[in-house]
Amino acid sequence: MAEYAKYVDVTKCDGCRACMVSCKNWNDLPAEPEDFQGSNQSHAKVTANTWNVLSFIEHENASGNLEYLFRHSACFHCKEAACVKVCPEDAMHYSELGTVVVNDEKCVGCGYCVQNCPFDVVSLATYKDKHGKEYKKAQKCTLCTDRIEEGMQPACISVCHTGAMEFGDRDKMIQKAEKRLAEIKGKFPNAVVYNPPGVGGTQTIYVLAEKPSVYGLPENPKVPTSAVVWKDYAQPIGKMMLGATTMAVIGAYISNKIFYKEDEGDGGHE
Amino acid sequence: MVEMNINRRQFLKLTGATAATLAIVELGFNEKEVYASSKELKIAKSTVTPTICCYCGVGCGILVHTKNNQVVYTEGDPDHPVNEGKLCSKGTTIRQLYTTEKRVLKPRYRAPGSSEWVEKDWEWMYERIAKRVKETRDASFIEKEGGIVVNKTERIASLGGAALDNEETYLLSKMMRGLGIVYLEHQARI
Image (cartoon, rainbow over all chains, first blue to last red; front, side, top):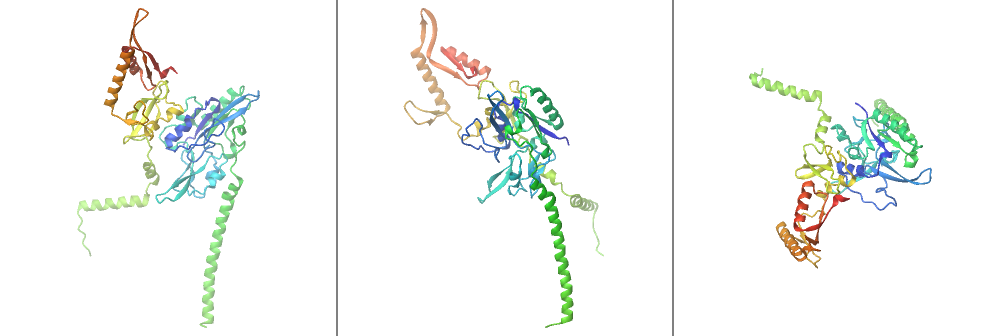
């Protein structure tokens, strides 16, 4: 299946926040009123019920003037996602479209994905069952996998009126980003295309006007080494060891039985 | 030996049932297909009604998806020439105009000097408005000003909202001019 990607050109964004509302509207997410943050930004960060947030960054540019930098922030849908790597229940998985989604039925709410996400975009939502008992499940942007499957665009992209966001074939989106970068280099000399290789590239291709760190993004995000060590080495070896131990126990049990019987045969009743 | 009295029909039924059982047991039950059909797209089978956004004078086209008389989703109308499927953040919230608990469903009247809102029916409202308009117009009507016929009233103003379309604003202005109202304002002026 073709690989898709979300293209976000922050230089075209006018900060209207329609993408935020559109996401809530499609996914039926409740409102989360937050206190004034001291800036024009409505929510501090992406949460379990607010899957994308438009960040307003007050940046001082080279000529010493204030520049508002907007960024539509949501799950990046990494090609080698840390959350998928660390999930012990295989709840966090890649869909057939390559998007990173949570299987609600498998998720136990352990929060490993929340701790390991290099972009801090996964959170736990708290629900109540019919007995009033609370339980948690990881929630985040699905890149509107349900819409894509039906041939529609993700909700946030379908609403964007400036053309700052587009959705399509990943290679084409990368090409588009490179082309746009060349166009804006004159105005924004620090501009970059953000598609970090440390997480295998992402399905969100950003054209950023400044360095990623200005936008609060890691310059070189990676799947945490501890997660790789644990999942790719420690766990398989551990499983092997467990197998070996089990076999040893069974072997010991059988041999003991034999010896016991022999003892019994030799010694007779006491 | 047990004699088997099976006619042709029974034989076919039996073999059919065996084949079906085997098909399920042997080939397995397609879990994915069942999952896909159980999680239907939320706007599948919804009734789509086009409308115009009521919030500002731009007049963006909106598609309202309804199911069982409930609004399940609203989105920009891709075929509308004004917005081509796009919407602003406020226009995107339009579903809440219907779903919110704060929505006023019946006309309410607050008498002069009163602090209480009283629910009234539309008939009562229309009559009340007509009566008050007539009273004010009759009391303030100016026929001539500086020797020129003006036939106007300066005590009534008309404010139109963004939800009004071209034809409605036409009718409204005709009616207001007919009453002699000169202060006509519309939100589309923004």
